[in-house]
Length: 461
Image 1: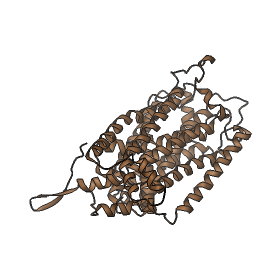
Image 2 (image 1 turned 90 degrees about the horizontal axis):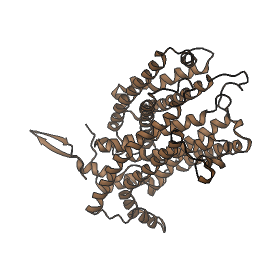
Image 3 (image 1 turned 30 degrees about the vertical axis):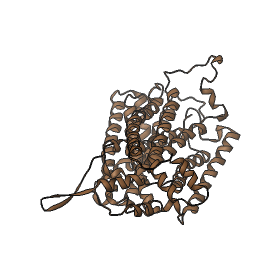
Image 4 (image 1 turned 180 degrees about the vertical axis):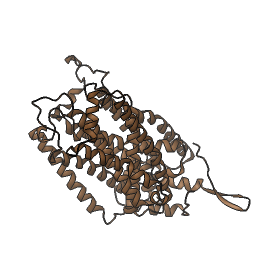
């Protein structure tokens, strides 16, 4: 049962706009630290552009490394916004209300971080536009059979759809901020952004219809994005461990696993940093913990099936790859594989079975951080060992080890997403005001016999 809060609209506005109209004490310290990490990463990237990609750990035959691993990871994290917001909105799950916007905003910044990894990966980013047929007189046309053609199309469509999703949901809250903002320019800026919102019945009806339509329309894009990313690997028949027909659903459920875990992690940080424990309560953590149990178990099933498919054929190259991944004390991949399994499933899922863990922000934060560490390692173990096993030559440069340049640039993407969330929370309310108020209006008590029980009222546009 949902834990009920009894606040009027004035109190809700005061609590949830405190971070927008005021400035938390920790804000400048956090922003300063994240900016330092970003400056360090951009400096490393400038050095890489100046010296060439040889300063990274890439070599023959491992030409995809931490950058592509990070690209796949952030694409997976971006699925959280649609999973939490669109699907739960369509299923009318009441517990979604305080967490939808944080999930949607994380989707936006995660997609930008994912796209930036492509720029980090190419050796000459100023010629990145060459991959597009910008001038048909050159006789260069897209190979539509290649997933690399559809990667940018799907990601950009997802980014545009997610941006509309966030903006449509923001409009009523922007009007509330407009009426309370002070200063010379802030009220004017918010007035333009809220598109003249006055809260008329017609505006509310159109806003509700737009939210439901966008939820339904963006779901196919949600499925297609990670399917196409998985085909970057699945169509490569020359690399052991990649050519698998189960990769599309396996990547999608893995993306949901890491994305929903990231949302739970963000929920805990919001509670601690903005002191909104009256709105994001233990029952919300309990609900997302139950969801994570289902998602993680489904992901592990696909992981198990993928390994069964790989071993069933008894092909020597495939068996050699799996041996490289899991055996050998002097083999770093075996240790990473063990850490990946423990952190992504065998430690967090048994802990989530206990209600006390699910209802604790601290333990949910710890377990979801472990999940995302494991899911990053999963992408790493899919990409690197397969390439390392591919047609070894006597003149190979050596095994792959991420360089300090790659580590700094990967850390920069995490700092970028974190900084984007912090700045967004300063400019716009991170917990949707109208969603919380709507839930309080829909909540009511009905009498059954001599008892008063909470009643659920379904949303209708």
